[in-house]
Image 1 (cartoon, rainbow over the protein chains, first blue to last red):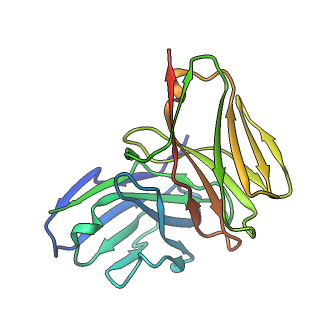
Image 2 (cartoon, rainbow over the protein chains, first blue to last red; image 1 turned 90 degrees about the vertical axis):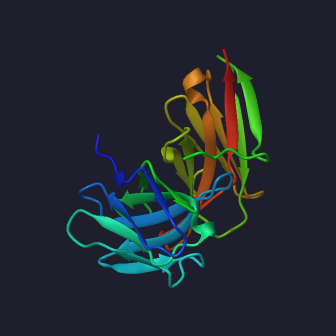
Image 3 (cartoon, rainbow over the protein chains, first blue to last red; image 1 turned 45 degrees about the vertical axis):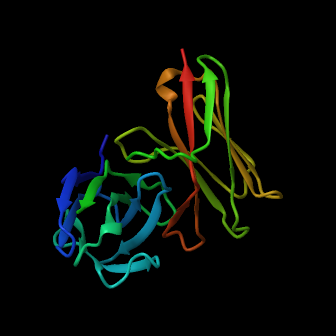
Length: 113
Length: 112
């Protein structure tokens, strides 16, 4: 069964550094998402992406965050200058259609020191 | 994908018993609801969904009930197995269809 993949599984970075989290959505999916989960808290929506542009974003997704689909397979989340409070699990998801089942990847654990 | 938290509600059931996990939602305009299972170290895994034009939907060993009057959603797992041990989240999909809003999660523990 096709699945969403994410790399790396764990990323450690120093405060103020830039990080790029990578995702390969399911190949025939058209809608892409990033969510995060701070340890001990619920999953929170960050951003959705369709047709090479952001379709919706949350308050968390400020100017420090950006997303990109650099080619036909990858979908990336960039955090320009990481803060301690960015430490979390970041999940990528994709869906075939709007309001269709979203498939989640295994996540990238980001640790900011 | 850990969801360990001091305040995470926990449901402990005996293997073979039925489990019921509850969720309340706040947005009366929400019309699409999903249950996800999250095992330790993994991402949320889709279990079952329901749209607001239905009040019950069944899958394999799972049933979702939707009560729009009181804005309540439940997940029933029949004959619970050790492999069902995980954190379960309900989520609502907004009317634009872009974002999922997750509930706080319930940890299900299955005793052999």
